[in-house]
Image 1 (tube, rainbow, N blue to C red):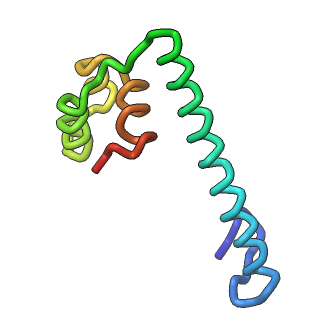
Image 2 (image 1 turned 180 degrees about the vertical axis):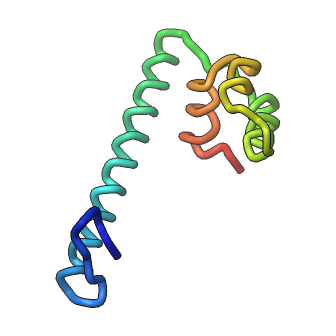
Image 3 (image 1 turned 90 degrees about the horizontal axis):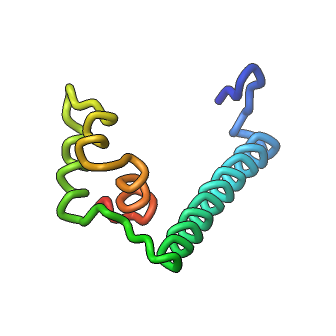
Amino acid sequence: MLSGQTPIDTSIAQGKRMFGIFASRAEFERELIRERTVAGLDSARARGRRATMTPAKIRPAQAATGQPGIVVADLCSELTSLRTITESSFVDGASD
């Protein structure tokens, strides 16, 4: 495995340790993003603001994103906003 210009040999202990550190850092960053997103959504709810996208609108949007020729920006403008789609479906895990 190569990281930039420096090779990391994952067959030895030092390489496995470095790979573990990178994986741990990535997991930490992902959880931090999730916590901040949830805190932001909770704050918005406390101020009386609600997400405008319903699951009935989110599911067709998710299905359309995988189709060739679909421009995500156009899809988002048609369905209100990218931020709402992202927060409601992908961050909160409702993409199933």
